[in-house]
Length: 307
Image (cartoon, rainbow, N blue to C red; front, side, top):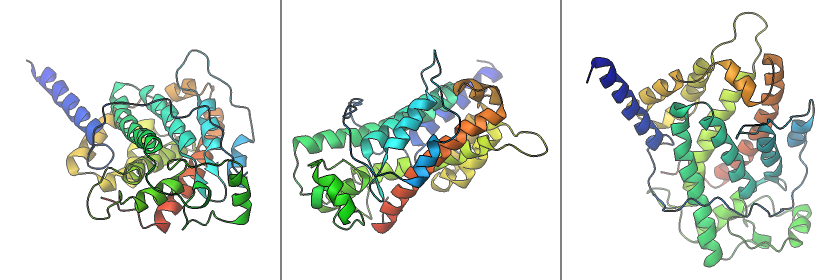
């Protein structure tokens, strides 16, 4: 085997290692099945939110023919995710991740390796939700929500009364409440909890939000920086904090394979940077609302550093 072949093989091994360890320390629990049909047809009640409403303003986002990733579908899921005053519905949240996985896979095999770990973690939450429905062993707070949540206000109760929801994994706050009461969350040791798994997705969502935000920037003067450079910068500000030295180095290798900006134009069906910025800013606002609500729920329950 020549020097170039050995180098290529070494890089591939590192990237595979990155894919398995991407979301802080690797995948700790493996599940045999990847469930994709997580109540996709359910319609959950939700309250309007001014920040989320901003997403629908501006130019219409069209369906892109002939490709798997659809930014219009991503925006639809993001708009359906915030609920009530400060909660996040898990079904559209996970559907948003499904679309983001397609986005990453469209950027090439090296970047797509990262998406495999994310898919595994969304599958863990879906599996826990399915098991919970089969064996509902814990009582929920009022109307299926957390008792220590600020979402037990009268306006929200009126919306929830009509839903008669008893699904433990209906939302972020209901999941937190149920898993805490079932003793599934341990603040000192790793456990098979949806809360811990969601925290890893939550951290990755901040990385993607910052990357897309940087990609949407239109400098007044000077060149547009490469997506590879922007992705690396976003990673260094977010996920790198939770990664070991070798994972950080592997991540930098993966970002080198990031395609040029023109690929992103085609992914969201736009012709130039101005149009790309308009579309990505919508996505960033939608992700930001979901991230902020999830962050608040974790903060209120002291879960931002679950092992």
